[in-house]
Length: 424
Image (cartoon, rainbow, N blue to C red; front, side, top):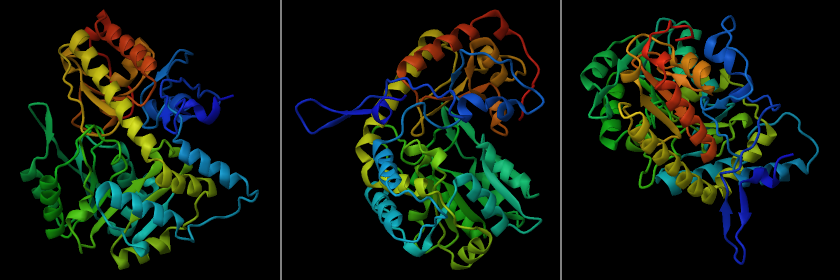
């Protein structure tokens, strides 16, 4: 049995203040969790399985090893009081009102009810939008390294995937606007998949960068599909600007947001897709059947209504985890290249100084450290020698994982090259 409410919160004695405890370790084995029970097929393919072991630490897929926001759990508990869970759609305004209030408070951005669609996640929306926007010979553009599903969705629909590589300038990832503009001017390019904040690097694009990317795309009739799923997971002092906010009146900017990352509700399968273009919405509705999970609908509404204080506490905890990682790398792997990211709970660490030859780092750290993470080979291109670590976990677990990683890197195996075995 889990602790009450997942063990994440409790009233502070003598006050009405609620505190949150993110240090509790919750065992996910036996819950059909992808993070622990589905990593082999995803990371290595069905024909290239890893050796099973019972001491693994999961730091790969982007969900948290922390209990979900109590506001979401309470909303689901309330929904459970009604014993019928039939076919459900988003008919009323409860979710819209909660989401619109959240956007106004956190981004100073107003959305319109008729423009908000729901989806069973951002990934399904990416697949659907390619089919809605792209002609059969159309192309999809993105920045690399990149979230793998941008490519998976494109290839699934038989479209061509086009990339513009980010450059690294004094530890900061930057857009090569000359290359980006040249790619966007291709008349076959019909969609730009923007990841904002960026996964895997954690960059929060500036307003100037967003305006420049947006103007290039809109001037070349490229629809911008902005995946902003990590938009609430910011470091202290940072603020997110939806790209659509910078282009009021433009209908070719689609915004994808969700409660999945912010409140650890990925399994609830609920995303909000803001589609300003009436013609595109019409095509979307013809191809997209809008069933939702009744529990997902309740969880999302509850999280947006009452999850703000929990998120503030989570951000502080994540900031501490990133500081820990930064300190450990400086002390034990001083040749690693790392900068605490603006956003996300994902750390992008360049370990190429320790691995001079081609190597599948996903396989290496699984075999040598017992840590499930994603090497740069999982992020399409431009990620050689890098790893992505999920820091949304109890600090004790993070310390153990980092100790294992550091010991494995400084061992003799790390000095030699290994063949690339996993999926790219």
